[in-house]
Amino acid sequence: MRLTGFIPGRGGSWELLVENGIISDIRVQSASSLSPTYTTTPVEVPAGGSGPAAGETPLWLSAGFFDIQVNGYAGVSFNEDVLTVEGVEKAVRALWLTGTALVFPTVTTGSPERLLYTFRTLERACAEAAPEVRHSIAGYHLEGPYISPEDGPRGAHPREFVRPPSWDEFQRLQEAAGGRIRLITLAPEVPGAIEFIEKAAKSGVVVALGHTGAQPEDIAKAVAAGALLSTHLGNGSHALIRRHPNYIWEQMANDALYASLVPDGFHLPPPVLKCMIRAKGVEHTILTTDAAGVAGLPPGIYSAQGRDLELVAGGPVKLRGTPFLAGSALRLNDGLTNAMNYAGVNLAEAVRMVTVNPARLMNLETKTGSLQRGMEANLTLFRLDGAGRVIIEKTIVKGQVVYQAK
Image (cartoon, rainbow, N blue to C red; front, side, top):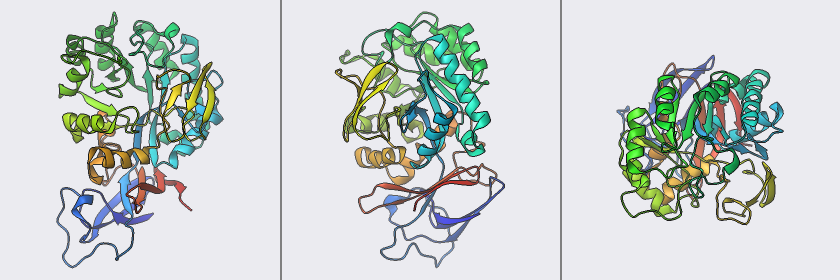
């Protein structure tokens, strides 16, 4: 397979060759005349080349977009007692239309039985679904149940199933998941959390802090124990907190922590998103959707996990009758658009936050996340329309075209 186009952050028009699911070669075709607002860190290119013809919308080549927090999509929730292999495949295939080549299905707080069932079903999907679906599922994210029981920090997680960390339970879940729980979100202030973080980190699981009402010193202890990420920073928190110090400032200021942010305009107001990206730096920020199972559906009232969710037209997903967010309806390509519009980042920076950064955090940077020889050919090709919106043209998973715009 031969692909040509422009690469955010690099000068010139480029050619990628893909063989047997791997990027076999990448080389400059010509120098670029694209606007500097599109690019950072130009590379040396041959003289005499040019960018796209006048009026032509350039095709951009990127490593495959990687979303580390997806609760479901297209009417499929990964957290329902009736989750099926077919449902998992349907959700993954629908995510390809958003440019998402790699995904962490996210399993949230529930009974021990339901968590075991979910992970076993996800593993069955990886065994029985089409190979490209299996390749897209890069691991699993366990969000809860070891979180704060307090209203506010707990968010939409059901109180009756929140519980202190149990290493024995986690090992049972990891066995059901085929050892593929790569990321866990917990609250560092709950009893036993610091010891759990130490064990999880030593086992190779990335630990994230979230749904927490922690004291600043709890954050510092968690980082010392091995925590590496703040999950949807600024959300899963009290409506009112001390001006300072508090657990949000502490996480923003800690250089050892990456931060995942939901750029839908509702989880974080645009000025907050902008300030958080500036505080963490583009190199330590990950954009995620936190998509609910109702994402991709028309606005309306839906039932999920025994509760009513309201999907507001052009707005968020909420527990009906409450102010609590229950995931988002965001598409990852729209998240890139929003990051550029709300936070003023350029295209290369926005792309980095859904490619290089999640791959690096998850210790997958030798396989995916950037365009280099020898990397898996997980690719997203897109254009920017007249309004600057990211429009997906093609999604490729390990060398297989899994979505192509008509």
